[in-house]
Length: 87
Image (cartoon, rainbow, N blue to C red; front, side):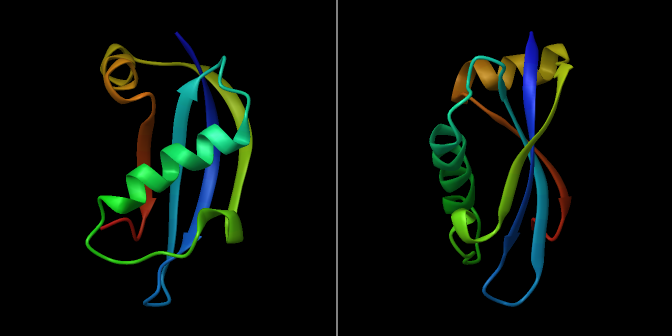
């Protein structure tokens, strides 16, 4: 499965900036759908973050997903690859 990788930065209310990639099926081209998935992800956090629309989220590139990533995308529609200040 090819996935679209969206490079994402969101400011937490404690001042730290989160950095993560959200991976979605290549057919998902609507940024509103990507933002909806990010909102679902942020709701699971034990801290508050600003609206992703006030941060930066942009399409980065396409890549082939691993079987583990495909399995999670099949379950929830997206996969998050966390980099900075996500916990």
